[in-house]
Amino acid sequence: MRLILTVGTRPEIIKMAPIYEIMDRVKEIEVLLVHTGQHYDWEMSEVFFKDLGVPEPDVELGVGSGSQLAQTSGVIDKMERVFRSYEPDGVLSVGDTNSVLGTAIASSKMEIPFIHVESGLRSYDFTMPEEINRRIADHLASINFSPTLGAFSNLLEEGYPVERVFLSGNTIVDAVMKVQELVGRSNILRELGISEDELLMTVTVHRKENTDYEHRMLGILKAIKELDDLTIVWPLHPRTLKRLKEYDLLRDLKAMDHVILTDPLGYLDFLKLLSSSHVVATDSGGVQEESVTLRVPCVILRNNTERPELIELGIGRIAGTNPASIISSVRDFVYSEKMRTKLEKLPNPYGDGTAAKVIVDVLRRIWDLRAIRHESPYFRGGSPHYIAFKVPENLVGITVARFQEMTGYEVVSIYNASGKAVFFDLSKPFLRGEVVRVRGDPYNFQKVVKLMRERR
Ligand code: UD1
Ligand code: UDP
Image 1: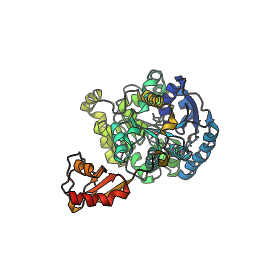
Image 2 (image 1 turned 120 degrees about the horizontal axis):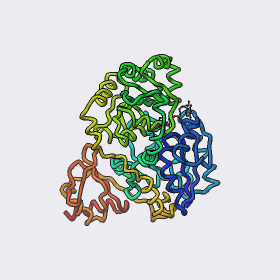
Image 3 (image 1 turned 90 degrees about the vertical axis):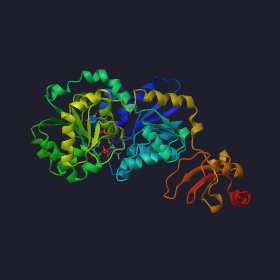
């Protein structure tokens, strides 16, 4: 089996590393590792290959920075050439970046099965480029691997066929566990001059919906200024550094004595910093997952999250960029004795460190990836036909079982008068106002309704 694995940004390299490591040991899988080049600075890309023990990519596309569309179309264009020359049986990507969207579109249009890892996350916020990317990538995929039950159920809710979705856990847990020992050897705290008795907070910010709005960055900075009872370490993402300079806020931040600004850290140093922190404030997706894995309470600098599990567990809180909400959330977490006791007993909804193994095992079982390719329905005996009808008076009260038995049509879904899907079994009677979706031969449908009327 010839597989292309793609990476483009920092979190993709981290989350792909455990999958690469296992595949590299499996003889029957031949892997080509392709880097889109969306992230290209040493501390945003190469350091993660080194820290996670992944060899250099086989192909570098050099797409680089640009607008949302330039980046996505650059990936589509350059991936086409790689796909043509390598002719893979499948293409696997992790996450929701422009690199992933470009890859999903390119492979689907070339009829190469696309395998999406970390699928089914939903923030319901279409102003996030990631929400657009993940929804399209999920629906183009021939197989989806969901990290949590919530993500899994989001896909089923959207009608994605259950036989093509697998619950794997998130490979970030595998990555954290894999490097645990090396993290212990990081000297980052000493290098930053931090002693063990300091109350420590890590901050990361990089989302467009924060960095591109001066008032939101100002809100975060105001909270940070006030929280001077803590030592705060903020490794600055290049996008954030650029914007802080543009807004002339970098000087203010540098003037805060309790704040240590650094370049983006490598993975081992960052995990050392995070695991030594009493709290983290972040708009990052990966850091939210790591906060649960490392049991560090997490204040989310966003107004929503596609990772609700940490909030359900009580280890995460959405604060947005309102200074008062950030400050109170941070203080509640840092000074609450009850919180610390609770943390010890938390389960990890993001996985147990075996996600990559599950993914590789499933792919090995499928073996012939061409078999899961989306093929034209003409080769499968024609398109399925769905008919939707509002329950007519003569069908009110008739059960699903009776309807199916008399007509041969299969009831697929039932929606109530407000458009919500209704749970049903064979004994459910049709109600006035409901809309029923059935599968069957469209030519017979009128005849069927007539027959139903006569037979009643
Ligand atoms: C991207 C992803 C985001 C992910 C994040 C991980 C999209 C839409 N966004 O956001 O989902 O959470 O990566 O960090 O795909 N830059 C550099 N050096 C680099 C990379 C970027 O200086 O190596 C600067 C450039 O000015 C660039 C800006 O950062 O314009 C933003 O980079 P980009 O990859 O477009 O988006 P991220 O904010 O990194
Ligand atoms: N990270 C890192 N160094 C840093 C900041 C973050 O190694 O200075 C790691 C972090 O541990 C997490 C990943 O980068 O695994 C998250 O990347 P990012 O926040 O850029 O993207 P997101 O997860 O939001 O897509």
